[in-house]
Image (cartoon, rainbow, N blue to C red; front, side, top):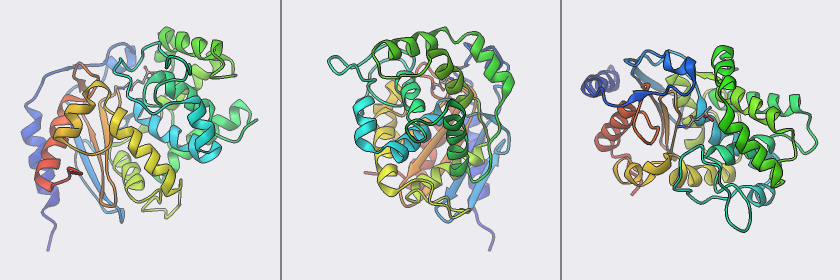
Length: 307
Ligand code: DON
């Protein structure tokens, strides 16, 4: 018998497509050029079976959705203590690009905001790795979650670098507090390249399914990171992944998730499914308006809420 899931996903997209609220991110000129009408959903079971609808094979830059994966690589490469000494796990209650550190410890509050993500980027790879080795570890590590080598959108990367003043300020602040030891502009450039990795909504679902599957990529069978690392990453995603909307998200959708300014959202229900959604218009928190709608529908219809 044919699965009813594809028709169901089509129907969910149809009901959410009418919502034209929000605006495409425009602080990076190349992102402002995105087709605002794009809409996609993909759901992957932990055995790697993917159901998808809409523009699920269209590529867009991963942006902040790269953050939990770089954090996972840092934990895998440096261990908990070393990473926790540099990056906290508390929600910040501030904008994703705020220049702020925890009082007293001078740590970034968590790895899902830019200040923590820039620090996490420098902790990927073994201590003493060269800049090129570290960057390759980030690209190949994030790619391993997707199960295929991801490419960089050079145009988006260049465009963001032209206006990266805020991230440069953050990186210089990190350097002055000795959270990072590397050259601040190099760290920003590599972080922006990390954010410019191209993914599809289908990739997001498989990356999420890898987290749902205890760190084993369901298609390649590779143990990308350990189960303990996954637990830490999903915990931080639960409290910090949707920025200031974390409370609304956890009460309505109820699964660990991470959003990005291109309009992607990745959600994980441990042991069950990975979800990817994509639509470029964002709400005031920086989360995809229709992406949130789609996830609310899936959560309600499929009983995904973790409580
Ligand atoms: O650091 C930045 O500004 C971007 N490259 C990534 C930000 C992002 O995706 C924030 N998420 N909603």
